[in-house]
Image (cartoon, rainbow, N blue to C red):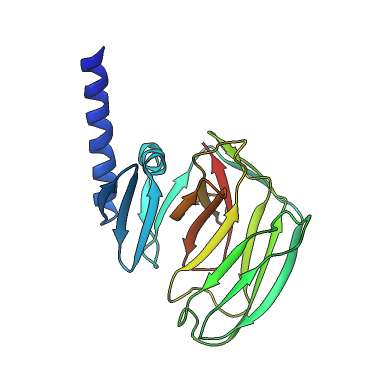
Length: 215
């Protein structure tokens, strides 16, 4: 049995390496964490999150921003009510939008727009929809987060989104997805998973609707 386990582990490591290579990433292991980089940002994630993304059998493609866009098959979407919680005018210098609204489904969400991500000042809004997303594997978040811009269709630099997650569903791993207009899911770039504070940070190059799934 030990030989079989070692063989399977070797295959798993190779699969992870090929996946990272396909995204033009390089990685270095430090302790229990793997640091991997793809220009222009440095990303960090736990080993388990790299494993789960590598093992999900999606067909990959790239959009204009260069992000990895992998379709999640076996999903169904039911439209829900959209509620916009906050709007803020953000200039080319960037800014941060924080939801501090106790009782709100998106309380604790933080969106950081870096300098020069916008060509011009724009109104950025943050809200949610209770649209129901059914996935083939795992448990989706109860709501979908909505990030809107009045005039901007894409960001020149990656915008980070930090959301609290439910450790009762999975204390170690949660994966963010963009929900496109046709209802397909596309895995998003993970910045980090903070297991102590139960927060997930990920990135987007455009206004979007997104959920997170607990494998």
